[in-house]
Amino acid sequence: METTIKSQDDIYRPHLATVLKSEPMTAMERFFELKLDSGRELGNKPGQFVEVSVLGIGEAPISVSSSPTQKGSFQLVVRNAGNVTRAIHNLKPGDKLGIRGPFGTNFPVEGTMKGKDIIFVCGGLGLAPVRSAINYVMDNRKNYGNVTILYGCRNPVERLFINEVKNWASKDRVTYTETVDRGDENWKGNVGVITTLMTDMSVDPGKTVAIVCGPPVMYKFAIMSLYKTGMTADNIYVSLERHMKCGVGKCGHCQINGLYACQEGPVFKYADVAEVKEAI
Image 1 (spheres, rainbow, N blue to C red):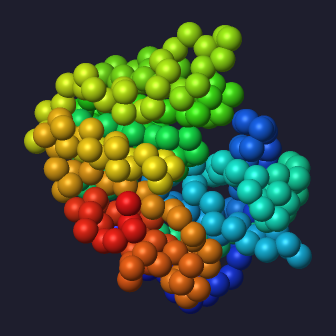
Image 2: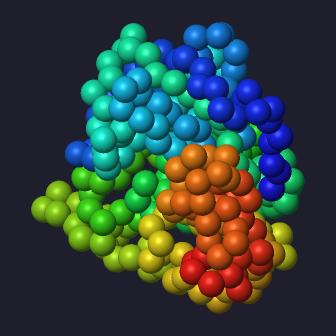
């Protein structure tokens, strides 16, 4: 993991961006493609987040969902969960908003992950930040071993990036498997929590790195399943985005017993937080 050092001007001053695309994904989530008006690249690394502001409404931290290998624009998935995100949902192509960042640590795509087999374990909206790392790996495929992508949702209509995962699954040495907690009359796939996809995994624990991101209840059981394969806490990375607000370690909303998720995270090596109370 790496932490990007920014100047005081960089961390406090929003930069104007224009909405290029706004599309519904589910009843709660909306996809946005944005471009900074300055013309510069966002400069994000997989797993980082930005602070998105709407004039007169407020600001919210949102994970960057696009890979830095995508040039000219960047992408976010925004869940409608409050005044700010509701205002973002109302934006249309051509509308303006403010962007601070990117902030936080990142998945070690150019570090520990390089040359290794990768297991991505994503629950619900957790696929949005992990997608940045998945697409980074896809765009640099020769640098990584076998890739396993596991995705779980509560029900079929909450699945994200349905068409894009078909492209992932078609790649060489990539396995994509998904499940839902509750199927519907049209669902023909797996039913059950995400750990049901992990019971028969073939893992070489010495050459594998796992990325875990999803709802809080998922982490403990997903990590237990990874331990059963022989993996250790040193090769498991988690994204803990809970309660983030200011993004620069000033407000304290994201503090987890002394750790600031917005500064020391949101991406942590599990070995560094396994003994931190309330982290997982």
